Amino acid sequence: MSANPGNSLRALSPTPPERGSFPLDHDGECTKQMQEYLECIKLVKGENAPNCRLLAKNYLKCRMDHQLMDQDEWKNLGLPEDQLKK
Image 1 (tube, helix red, strand yellow):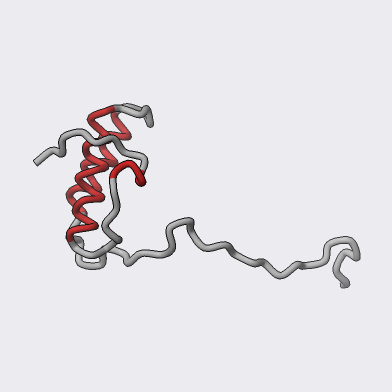
Image 2 (cartoon, one colour; image 1 turned 135 degrees about the vertical axis):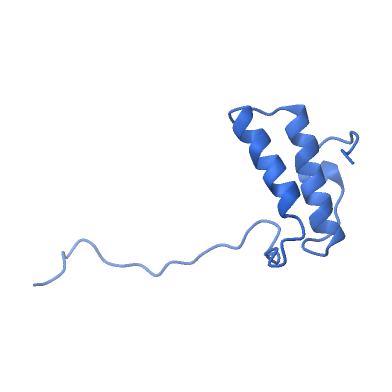
């Protein structure tokens, strides 16, 4: 059988993420913070809740502290300059 003449396969040219790639957390150093954030998002059904933003900041701070992502300012990550949960 032959392929459909109108359906030619084009080479896919993937685009990199806006901020580049970052290492995965293979050692699970930030798993607890990630799970807390995901549970919060689940509880608020995806709403933009302030308490979930604090958990997101805790997770991203953990990633920055363990060199799993570059250090950056919160405003550049779309998060407000409010208190972090300890």
